[in-house]
Image (cartoon, rainbow, N blue to C red; front, top):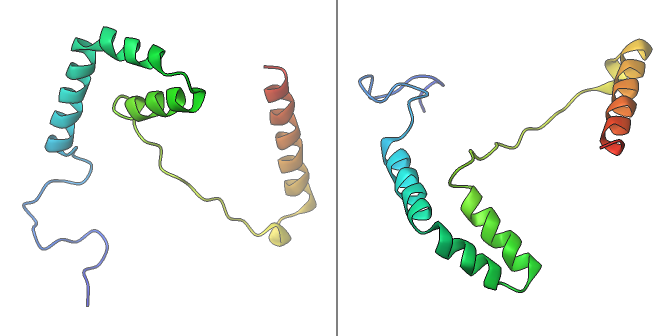
Length: 103
């Protein structure tokens, strides 16, 4: 039988939410490397002719500076919602769709 969620066999371990020091150190080293060699990185990027290669190059670098977003899932049972709730959702979606088109 496994442990219940939120329990551990090592109560003196790292508290929840504390960043992993090794990952933080590695990310800092990569950031320092990119800062120190930024002109060369930009030059290499410009040498790429294929747009897909440029996008992949950029995507591979950006993940070291921006946090990765975790995928989320939205589930709802529309059959249990009132007509007013459904109308509200539809109106919000329409409004957001129009906002995106105007950008």
